[in-house]
Length: 371
Image (cartoon, rainbow, N blue to C red; front, side):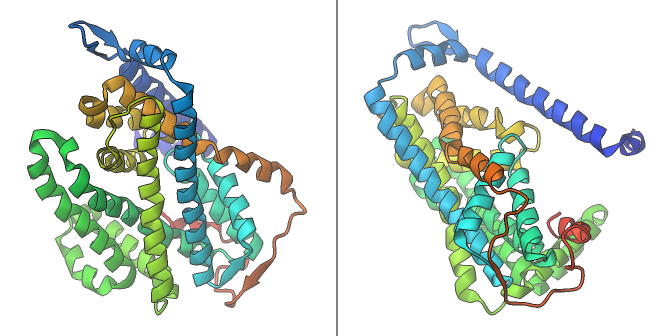
């Protein structure tokens, strides 16, 4: 079966995968919206019915300012993400003007709006930096380090918010905390060791199952190679770490404002932020739906239904997506105004590495570096 799948044209495989993901997305929303919850009077109604009732009762004088607060909070996180990408490229010796980074980033977010996780954004940023710098190895290395730092930011957000919002885990909060804190800490430390002290990680690879050991070994080696340009740049890496945390913390905090926007006046900031840190990890990690749709709403409802109501949890999660994408729409402007003749100013502080001669001819090494 696998052999038959690989024999199909790449375009057909992509189309099939897209259709499957669209199907899973639609199915997830169907199950979510048809799920029945208590209506507070002893009866039950579907999530869809509860959402409709909630939308009809919105107070615009509350809705508008809190939606704006949610959008600005997310924009601050996006700005930090842009700055992180800028700094990582500078660390690789590639200096664009920041306005070019802004345009490339928003275009990438626009292109990737309906793709799984951050695939579209990552691919476009890499393409953009490689095209205009005429380097591939360096932008690919920056992308690889950015992905590891970004994942660390998710775990750091979880760890920071946990002491204040762990009650969202219910009666098993103590047990879940005892298990997840060491895992999150281990993940953060492990990711940084892979990047900057791979020698400490190599002996542990012998404990990995034989089947996946070679692949894990290759991942560690690629990440270590990608991070080599940043050794001795402690200040830059510290700044990137802080930015990675702010990026994800801002996203998690945004959902508090969307909850307030739909009239959940009793929403607790830390409770919502902590629950949202878990939801963000689930959304980013899910390869099964388009843009994390469905997964975002389901996880948020599972964690916050008892504290905010099931319909309110779903609506605040969905509203968070649109608040987050408000700035993304500006990416269309950059996409259409930066034509074939557009050339940004770029300064290269390092000579070309072998394999970096042309973005077109060196696409495979770049893809391997971020695989």
